[in-house]
Image 1: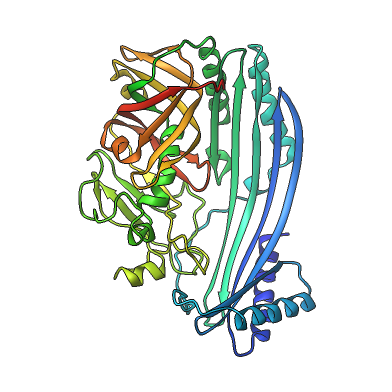
Image 2: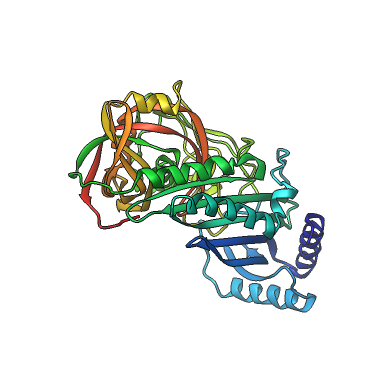
Length: 452
């Protein structure tokens, strides 16, 4: 289905639902996507699939009571009628929700174009050609390669009976490669809403080179080290900071380790972080799931916590302005900045590595998760390349380690930040545009048997 057809379907379903809702207010969230995936392992493509799906969430509201029913975007008129009647029944049999916010009226949104036709419709043959490149590079060293090549598009539309209308389309491309030898592996990934933004040849060369260098790793003792984190490794630590650190609801409920610190220095003065969906490198949306216009927000400036992100409910409770980061109502999660950007420094990534006399180079982390919420202490494992840095040079490979480290301590121990930034994906949600970084006193709590 074309984007024009998607928009026409969205408008048609909205009109039909609003005609059926009667005395109820109504909100409709239209979500449609197409995703194509080529998966490979042991130097062979083993899966090709394409998925297209569309859902419509129909939410009716009467006072402080609400009810939601989901149907397919291909639902017939009869199915839409049944869905609306079911939503009415849910409303009448649901307790009032005092936190429920009224639906919005007409809003104005910035123009944004993050849809690339070529990227959205990349053919299976093109994805196979990319796999062939990585397999050829892998076989040249008697390695095995595994990973994905993925592309597609998403559409999000929001409409309600007060006249709000929001519609946006995004394309996406993700390429990842894990190259494995007998005793070590390398990894690289690229992602963008534009296929041409990803330097596939450079990513392949990086994965193969890391695999070559990571063979026969040596043991090292747990302890505190100066580390150089690639953008992927650094970005992995920031995902939970997004969710817990900058989410106004987590402050209101006392779960954020940054509670009560607005306007205060919380991190190294070297750090500046913004949330900006309008940066050309993002496939961002100009509105949130409440149909509120999304704002660019400075979160941290030279180490000082400047702002949080708010949905309409937390903004009301905390005497602030909404920032357009709300999730779908009813929402108990709060607001999340999904377009985090960390400002770069004034030295290249190679230069910041050269500045480290003794330390560890971390390619990326694996299974990172929260071990203590109130301090935002994270734990996880290194993966696909952990190396000693000696006299400014990446030298011998070492075995993977488990880390246990608070985000607050980590971001106060920043030694240097690279000038180059890279878009990285998040293991659980979102992503970030981040530089490589040097962190002092990073705690590796134990060895791990994980061999990748």
